[in-house]
Image (cartoon, rainbow, N blue to C red; front, side, top):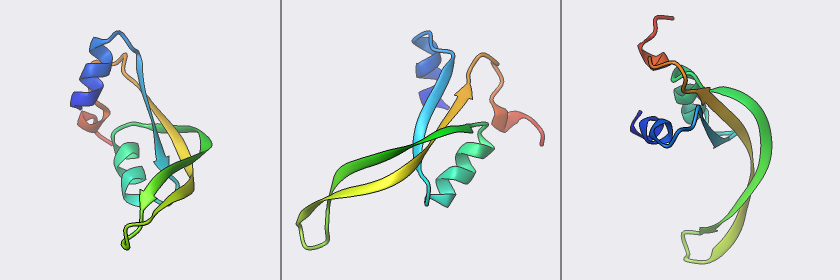
Length: 79
C-alpha cells in the first residue's frame, strides 16, 4: 500500500507490475489487492547459482495493473 501511495503522490492514476507466471503466491496476493492481468512479456535477468556462477534466467511474466483513482483500497472492500 505504501508503494501505491508513492505512485499516487507522483500523480499517476495506476500501478503496474510484472509477476512471473509460475509465482502462484504473488499472483493470488496481487489479485486479492485488486490487480488485473492485461498482458504478458518475456523477461530475463542475471541470477547467481548456488555454486556462485552467474547465468541468464528467462521466464514469462504476467503484466498486472490496478487503477488508483478510487481512494479506497480493494483489500478493504468486501468480496
